[in-house]
Length: 351
Image 1 (tube, one colour):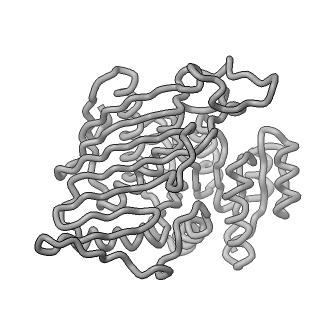
Image 2 (cartoon, rainbow, N blue to C red; image 1 turned 90 degrees about the vertical axis):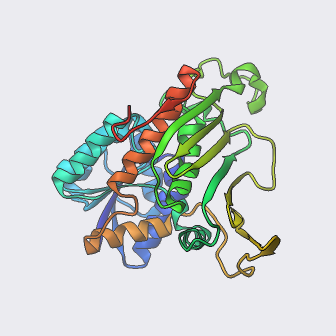
């Protein structure tokens, strides 16, 4: 079995990463050989809950547990250094999104993986939804014709990371929209983004009561660069435009996240799936039958299973090097546009 170790025992590790690894271990696909965290008590709690050995430091875990796969679930500023350590130890790396704080860091991680002949991938579990795979096949088959416009949105109620502000890297665009945008690019066959335009706003600073904090807690120390609302637009090669919106403090909604695809011959949506085809002037509902596809969720078990298979078989990671750099270029460009207040252009070098 493949030996797996986890760095970072915060909320996402407890809710998603460790349940997925535990499931893979129970299925005989891997062995969970260690967890560690900068806050040792947190690692002790999760190690006990999920039956994993606990180590006091990354160095100790790499040396003693000798993992083949390292899963990095820390805050973003630590991803680059931790990935390089893991590659030096001969490990494959699965990393939480965003993979890095900049394109420069992402490039360094990709190059380190190539030098070590190890896999590097990002936790983009949306690609593994039944609905995503189904729609990707329909788009590739030309059922919608040319997709000329995509709208994606997402967020949550009262979800601003107040207690993580000191370690956070930017805000909701970086931590939520990256999922939505990666899925759009993947569904469309990975076209290159050409230009980006974005707007970022921190509603919480103007209206602190929006978070509903308990008495005595304050948001006075929240960094101004951590936006809780973001909107933007990307122009893609091939005459397609993507508009996006993300909100950590959005109002309750029966559909808090979604995707809409407009094609010359039809439209489609995700979460939930719907396909409408324009056949000679009449709209026909061509949605797959209810229950034929598993509903979208945020579980990581399929992602972990795919990554383990790639490690075992020596095949490509679920998210490859070019995809890693493409999404990082797009994220950097969106934030540059928001900072400058104007549209910016991208090329393969990220300028």
